[in-house]
Image (tube, rainbow, N blue to C red):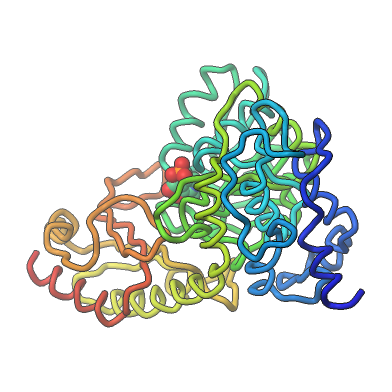
Length: 410
Ligand SMILES: Cc1ncc(COP(=O)(O)O)c(C=O)c1O
């Protein structure tokens, strides 16, 4: 194939002729003929598909609707070839899902209205009363609520373990099987760095599905599916979209599982909207550049803070003092999330009143840096006097100066 016809091929045919149970036909068709299914390609952390293009080029070109460099926003709920009640076969949404599949190296994808939306739908679609879920002791706050309160109330048993010791998962699954194992490779908000490869292997060995929340690292820094994960989810509200201007969630992975989730949307509702998908798609095109810059700036700020006399310890994946084993170490970096353990209560309590450039606010993964003071939660590995930081895309010098002046005022 010459370069042009390859490109046409990779963009996928217009998403026509979708059959029930085949959620993302154009993307899926691409993948059925794509060497990604070959193990050796999957195991290459810097995989690129048969176009020979690398990640950054795929992020820009892959998945756009045939004939377009920017897939238009289609608000048509019955676009030709996309009809099916309650579905997400909208051309604009399909463009984003195809990009996510290509970058994650997955077979199929389905979108939801936000990260929590797609996680909840995934659980509702795949789990039944009597099933068992095993999860790391710490995840995003509302995932914890879903796991702690809602799943048990639906008759689903949830066990929390410390996945820093993968052998704990092995022991648990050996004693009793589980339907699904859930974790974040770089944990919100504790900044623990888990051994995703090992955890995937254990889940697989005992017949459990692995659901990996890759919101924080993105496929640019880690591709869980290449390590064997069955499902990879994203709050695309965060780094994938990257501009804090759209909300969405995407889960991608095994075609059979995605079909089940896709089908459940017909009665659960909760779809990824075309306008949000369009905004996120534009963000994905610059994902490699943004993740590189988030990682560089966070590394500089983490090193600065680690030496600051007010600081007890900085938790950042790129610091050997925190990530001694170099877990998940991508040569491309660790993204923008770090945590600060303070020596004194007063800095922890009042830093937010004194920052000027940095926002004292929740959310993460966009150009604005933010801090959020956390309460101690020993069962989740969240220490006392702890602040979660999302390093944005401002200049590192300005961020360090802001931390310095704010700490001095505390
Ligand atoms: C790791 C992780 N997963 C899921 C979510 C939920 O995403 P959303 O806010 O889009 O519902 C978040 C939100 O911060 C998150 O950090």
